[in-house]
Length: 173
Image (cartoon, rainbow, N blue to C red; front, top):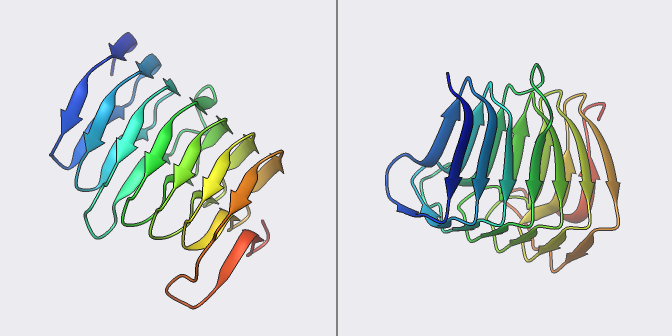
């Protein structure tokens, strides 16, 4: 329940979430490093933020996600731009009923999908480098809408079901 917050140039490690923003608007999260946590490096829930220039590595819990956006559709679109997200157990960037612009990020080496637009989310995904993730580089599902263009996707490896696609859209996405 905050507004006009800036979190900049911090090192964060440990905990369930590296950074958690809940029910807040006009938040800036920029140039932070480490962001190693158990569940998510950065998690937004019912919030809007500019997430830029962060380095998120090795979120290692069983559902570890680099950046998770949850239930943000009622807020201004989240901007996720210019971040490095790598080596998490699951997704690099994942959206659940969220609205975002995901641009010019390096998303690599994650255990399940580089960028996932899920559960009736809306996203513009452009100019990202998505490398060596499992299952799918960019994934859209469950009635989500995504404009996907000008991304570089390489080295997608087989995921838990044995699939490996650069881009996959399923379940009416």
